[in-house]
Length: 399
Length: 93
Image (cartoon, rainbow over all chains, first blue to last red; front, side, top):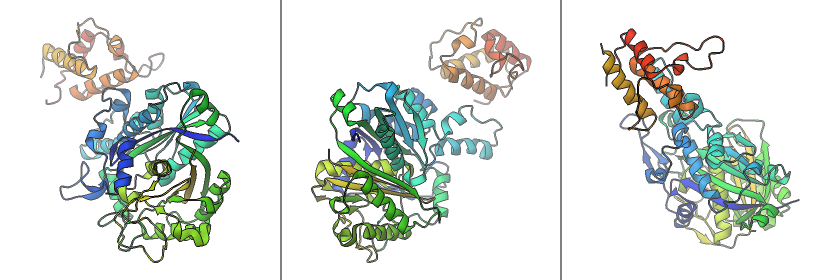
């Protein structure tokens, strides 16, 4: 089996534009979350959120097709993907795939459109509504902006979308369908309607996101995008591209049960399957980037699954829930967190689980509380468990 | 009610803004289809003109008329005549 390597990374997160800012943010361990009031919301509506700072979009091509046609999710995706391929100019566009993971993509386009129709009582929709709001808009605009002509697809599995996009790109490469793939997770969900919908689920944190911690009260929504350029090892070598890490394994599954409550046996089996796919023993895992949303239901199920997979070692593996730092970026989350795991492997550190007040005794994990730690990571897992019971786990290895 | 000169002036402003070219020369003989750089420009121009003057340009012909209004085959002068004939007031600024 050919090895699949990562040769480029890009990110736009609450820490700002660029991998360097994400890396610095993960090392510093200070959350990039702040109270935010979305457009159309009453003056007193504020929620903690991981908002991409305005200056991150300043380099955006505001006259280009992505900006004109782009919902914010599209613009973020194009920015992240441009960074991921910036160092590799000799990609063959015909054999490079685009896989975008997104929970819903067009929140901004849809809500602005509905405001126009239902609040302003206009009778005409904007003629670009469909093109801006369609779930595949980021993938379409990425192929146009980057000139990539291989298979261009959108994967949508809620909060696991970014992880699935990377994993499915891995299989496209393993099967030799393409030689390279740009795998992207993107989401721009900080709109009033979207935030109210999450409020209604009663999963939004009262103060901030505290995964696996006593005193936690829920998740903090975020926006962002992250992109990975994946290549077969031989294609990368032929081009003289430097591998940053290997995508060693991937597993995906569905609980086929409750739409919200994660199934412990099912997510444990998915982690185990990712280890088998990578040919890695559980004892070799040095680090886990947890799904770690900061909701009691998710944290306890994930912790129980980690104990099943790793047995007595579970409490000794550094498990980081980086959502406490960059927020829960839904469809982008898995891609941001896979990159966080790669940065840990490359940088010799594990990022902290921030805002931690003491580990929930029902979790029993080493969550690297509040402060990054030097650690030699060779192999890491990155977990994503979505609403709907869709699970995806990646195994990342030093190349 | 706007007179023909006002409508012409406003339409030229709309087209220059939509085409992102403030210096665009727009004689009345200019064919609207030839103005557009891409498929989106035409769609947006038709929309903004309909919105501004609160009018509906003629619908696509049933056969062989393309997907957009046949107005895109008109000259700018034709368009202004058509809008003027409907006494379009234009949206408030």
